[in-house]
Image (cartoon, rainbow, N blue to C red; front, side, top):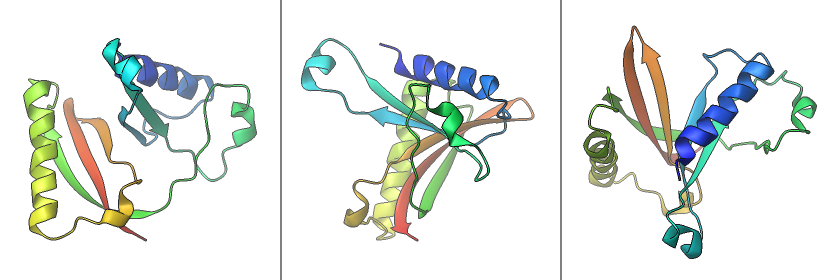
Length: 139
């Protein structure tokens, strides 16, 4: 019922277990669930942690995670300052603003429908930021 907290917590514990620095790039996004699961109030969430090229992926084989190779894209990004202050207003407004900008600049690319739109939360000098990231071109 709280997939963000559960999935992010799980992945951050794995990061500590395998000595990945807190500064490692991390991205999350809502993941669709079945209609039955949705009716039960369940929601899905997927969370990515970027691994360096020299990371030995075989050590993760015992963990319930999947290693993915993500294609390179050019992205449109909007940054929200302190997104968790009134998050049900600020985060959707950020998504809406970025989508409108993409459409207004004719950057929507139907070929990228399967590419994932992402959210990345960072903290800099005690200020929380959320970058909303939408792929617009495959590289």
